[in-house]
Image (cartoon, rainbow, N blue to C red):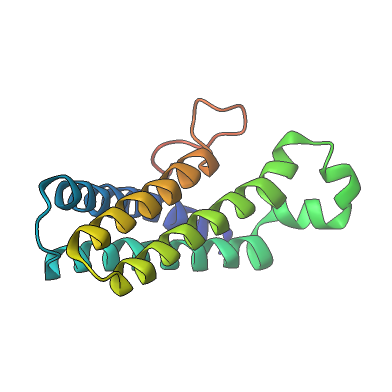
Length: 154
């Protein structure tokens, strides 16, 4: 079960990044061109949010129920804070992803409520980008000591 959720979580990362890029490109493009906020702009933000929500849900299942890494961290949290790998997965990864999720959701909500089309694009661009950067920092990239492969190993 752990491997299934880990593979799913690893694959969903790419959807989140793809939809995040798409939403940011549309938001920055609309902001700089001062174009009308369209249904496509709204859908891009919606796809980003839905993919991120799904990713976080799978991550929370991993975190709280099936991951041997977090189970090891929970068994002795004090010792886990001294181990970079356990600390990353028990605290840092979760915290960064939840902060990224919050920025994306706040951006989507504020963009929908903005009065002008330019304000909608500007709000989406700023919040989606902050969320995206926070998410990028929290991903266990392979070049990091505690990283995972770009694609899951089957």
